[in-house]
Image 1 (tube, one colour):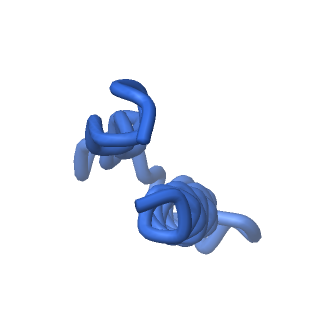
Image 2 (image 1 turned 180 degrees about the vertical axis):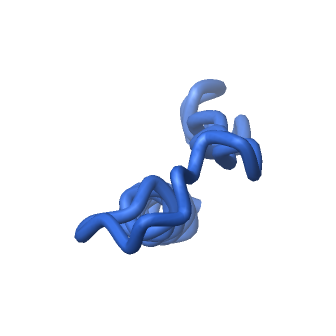
Length: 58
């Protein structure tokens, strides 16, 4: 087993959550919080894939 495969996968940082004052409150579609949720879901999927890939190499 190579040394690189024993190291845990480095996960990307999570997306930054918007501040409450970044939402204008006018019902925009998509709202900054909708976009954040989409980015957060993609981040979770990416982290899960990286961890799964790491597990398969172990």
